[in-house]
Image (tube, rainbow over all chains, first blue to last red; front, side):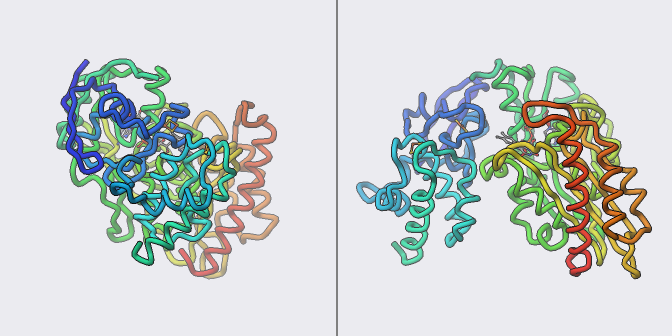
Length: 159
Length: 292
Ligand SMILES: Cc1cc2nc3c(=O)[nH]c(=O)nc-3n(C[C@H](O)[C@H](O)[C@H](O)COP(=O)(O)OP(=O)(O)OC[C@H]3O[C@@H](n4cnc5c(N)ncnc54)[C@H](O)[C@@H]3O)c2cc1C
Ligand code: FES
Ligand code: FES
């Protein structure tokens, strides 16, 4: 029952910890690195609340072992804002009321961040496909789509 | 949900990986995308003592055309297939299917090889590969062997892979001109497994008859099904509505779905029939449209 030293670069910072092989990435992020913005919703790979970027790609951190992230780059919701300046996606969610209870929001933001890095000018349909792995019980998604469009527009203008 | 404890191995070469798998036999499992295996381990339906993570093996993520074959390495993710211009241009059947699999995050991790190796009749790729007539290249400690995909699926969650073997790559014949394909899936909500789904691939001859036909059925029985009777019936015939309807009937006849929480068996059979007709219709239209 092996244990491993895992070192990751998360939100630009190098962090390590000794973990059991079966430790899920989401628990590593929340309980060891104390970054609790990443949520656990379903724990069954369905809801997307645990979404983080691994090497720039959106993944469900409840369905990856922490050891698999050894030597890799991670980004979580805590890494979006630069100091007090919100990321355009965060601004979009604020402007367009893209959240109500906020539980799904960190995962939504990271899925949207993954989408925009691959496709900076997505159509409405592409945004909907892009967040298809994230469930929101509150908003009805309309305003989330608007928030992502806001961010895409703002980033295209160099904001 | 915490999986049972295990020893984690991260081999750096294919030889090392098959060596580890051979050494631990039934106590070991290969880990690629982890999008089927990790959920099963969390539910403790699977509890391998050794996990052999192949993600760190370099050079297995190639997606390349070689002559008349598309070679897909074991670590090609579903997202890579979804974004590939070759897939879009030459494999409309695969392009249709891949975007219907799960969701973007799962597709960023999950591999074609793992989707096949899992042996789940509910997975979408087996039917696609059956319709396209793919071959599976299997690596073991004694060397490699190549198996046609219709010999690969043995039972529910059981494939022709022996302990100690890995899927190394999948070889998909590139359809000639005048070919087309399509995949239709009925699902309760986006990203869910199919209630049933059908994939069809057709090549037309000069006179517009069906020269080659491949039909695969998803979640329509204990294993993925190649609808050989429907394929044989349609081969050499005109793609008339009457002939497509008969092919649909024969495909449904070969299906053997079980009633479950998704739908009753007779509904699934009826949908196999209808989806076979519709995918064939689209495949033929695409074949005529010039897109391969
Ligand atoms: C929420 C959710 C929804 C999903 N919906 C769909 C869907 O609609 N359609 C669909 O098709 N799939 C669906 N899937 C499954 C997904 O596509 C998986 O990624 C896929 O079935 C397995 O691929 P993997 O690379 O993740 O394999 P893993 O999970 O790593 O492995 C699966 C099995 O195959 C074995 N294996 C893996 N790679 C190899 C290899 N190279 N050689 C030999 N054995 C190997 C493993 O040991 C294991 O037994 C869904 C998954 C989730 C979590
Ligand atoms: S907690 Fe990971 S997908 Fe729901
Ligand atoms: S805002 Fe409540 S779940 Fe999305």
